[in-house]
Amino acid sequence: MARARAGIPGCSWPAAIIAGSRGRCSMSALHRATVVDRRRVALHDELIRWAHAYATNGLPIFPVAWNKFPHIKWGAGASTDPAQIDIYWRRWPCAMIGLPTGAKSGLIVVDIDRKNGVDGFQTMRANGWTIDARAVEVRTPSGGSHFYFPLKQGDIIKNSASKLGPGIDVRGDGGFVVLPPSRPSLDAPDYHFAEGQEYREMGRLLW
Image (tube, rainbow, N blue to C red):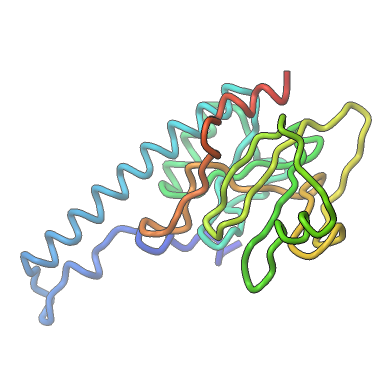
């Protein structure tokens, strides 16, 4: 998909801000470009390190653009192969890390949104629902949460949007989620594990 291959805002090579009004390079612009480029490299290094960690724990991953469009046909392209992961993140250095849900990964996700005037946590409270303490929680940039659960053998769980209630989605077969430490741009909030949790907790759900 061509639109999915656009560079992440704030993460592309910063040539545009280097040129002065007559095509000359101003020192202040060059300094800004250098700072941006260093942050870009740091983000890439962090992403590739985490990508390999997920794969080591048996989670197939794939690159996702800042607008949540997959860079590849992820149904077949999600991989745990270190060489393939390196290829993906060389081509899209700051791509977010995508994870297929459902049978592909053995995980399902309850996605609780808190945006656009909808609060899935309020829906939870209104219905007296709680999340199992054994779930792994990832906080999203918009203030919501992804709660990860193991898919029980033989179960088939499909995607649903607000079927359980406003602001509560389920990610199962045919869906995917974005993993930490992805972020839609250099200056945007990131996806991150809730306090006291880390990526190894994802592997725990599969064992």
